[in-house]
Image (cartoon, rainbow, N blue to C red; front, top):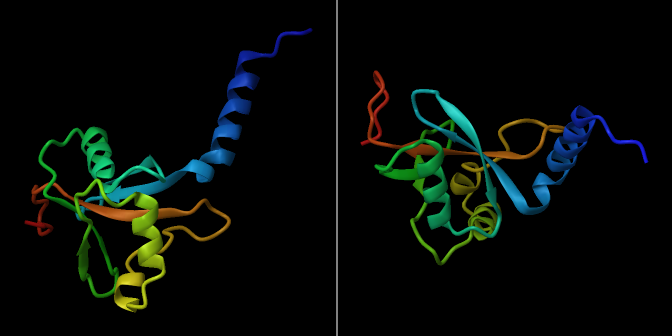
Length: 135
């Protein structure tokens, strides 16, 4: 049997990874109010406490004040609780099924189809950036 080119193998593995992300993980765009953001891949069954831990690791930030979602039009915020009792899947599902349109509009996919579904959450690390300060 002929050996595959390592670049081809890597490309195939990355394509497989990308195609299967949504089976077990959410893609979260973690943003600061200054405009800086990064993608975070989190397992759907992680708890909200795990989400806080992962954001802390990714941003090398020990002092997270809070994570929140917000209505982009009204700028009204909804704090994500720090708890082991709610999974990320439950949190997202509860928001999507909410009858409160103010809350429901806070968590919508960031990018249009056919892009993967990406949700945005905000990080308040208590650092002020120009006029943007969460504390």
